[in-house]
Image (cartoon, rainbow, N blue to C red; front, side, top):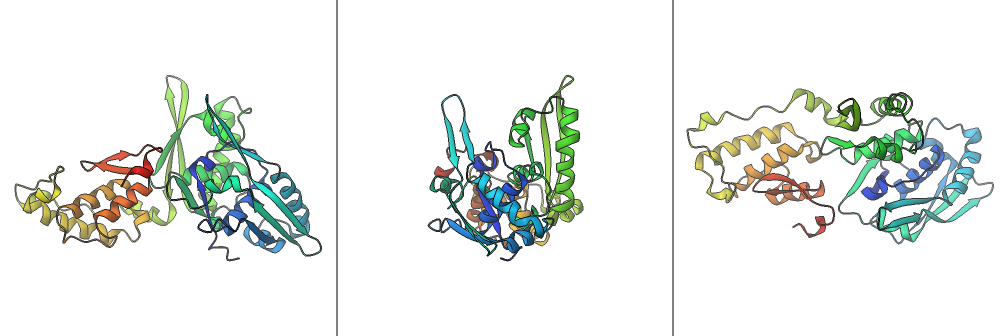
Length: 337
């Protein structure tokens, strides 16, 4: 197994599911999801060795690794995760339906339950993806879960959630009634570890109503684009340079003024020279891309045509209405073209 090539993909409902696991269980789940090919769900079973486990999680002691892994596999095969829990429905899914120990070989086999497949296979919308290497050095379940929750919103750059939901996701719903205690013992250590050991930079701001903290707002940045964020994208040319009639027609972009079309072409050059990959482009500049490409069919960018920008927006859960950003409801995303 190549440590840098294993990618974990989970439906967002799985990321936000309610379940309790030990660190070793979460590591085994992550390793098997990394090996799993979501485009080939027919193969649900995977072998891995103690050497694989130690390679991907370097703080594991090789002398005790076999016992750790065997105990964790025994536990994870009995786990159920709560994917839906509301007034009308409670849906739970078991993770594993088969486990095998190859005695004296240091090798194990795990097979995912078929009921789990809709949440890990052939995911095209509403899913979260990250590299296994980015969680390999984490030392707590809290850090892994918080990293996943932040990765879910890395494209938007922030997420806001209630303390109650966050504590449930981090498996401490019945602990730390005071925020200061929760922050000191769980949240701050997890954020510090994410910032030190992963590809994300995360900060949190308590949102207050009066004296009470009602929610938490997380700011999420990708380290690979953090330098770009600090540098800031070069400003677009001033519209006055192009004359007095630089106007975008949101109803029909091709009816925008000739001056705007020239302005848009120059702005596209600014965007293309700054961003290297489309994953680094924030939502507001994706909107700029869409507008600048829409005014003239001859306009090009390194990321394709306007339809390619719309496809990227849809992948992130958004669409444009008169070239204003609109979030797509989860139950409608499959119907958006």
